[in-house]
Length: 188
Image 1 (cartoon, rainbow, N blue to C red):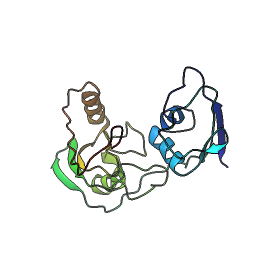
Image 2 (cartoon, rainbow, N blue to C red):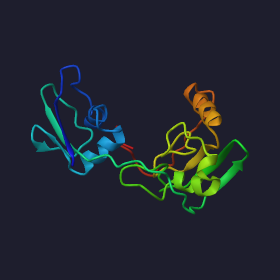
Image 3 (cartoon, rainbow, N blue to C red):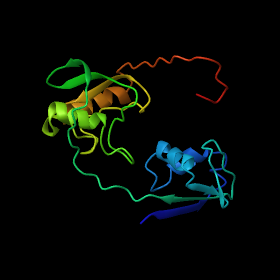
C-alpha cells in the first residue's frame, strides 16, 4: 500500500524548488526521485497537480504526494551486459559507461544495470559492498543519460579509499558537455 505525504511549507523553506523540498522529506529517497514523482503527476500543491520541479514553494503551501511502497532490495543478479573496460586489476575497474545504462537497481530499474553487469563480470563476492548489497562495486554514479569513465571497486577497502579520494577532491574528475543550439539561463 502506498503512503501519503502531506506537509506545509514552513517560512524558512519558502523559495525552495519543489524537487529539492520534496527530496528532503522522509520517504523520498532523492531529489531525482522527487523530480520523477512530479513528472508523473503524483504531486499536488494546495490540491492542484504541479508538474514543474522548478515550482518554488511559498510559506503555507500544502504539498501532497502518494509515495510508492519501496521495493524490497534483493540480491543483484549478474546479467551479461557488455562492459567497455579501460583498465582492470585485482582492486578496481575503470570502465566507460554508455549512455542509457542505469548504475544500480532503483525504483523502475531492477535489472539491466551496471551493477548487474559487474556481478556477471566479477561475481558478487568479488565486489565492494560499502554502498550496500544492491550497489556492488559502485564507487560513484553517472546519470542514466550520461556517458563517461567510472570506477568500480573489487573490495570494501578499495571502495572506501576511492570514495574518500572523491569526497576530499583528491581524485580529479572532469566533465565535458557538447551543446548544440542556444540554452536558456536556468536550463540544461
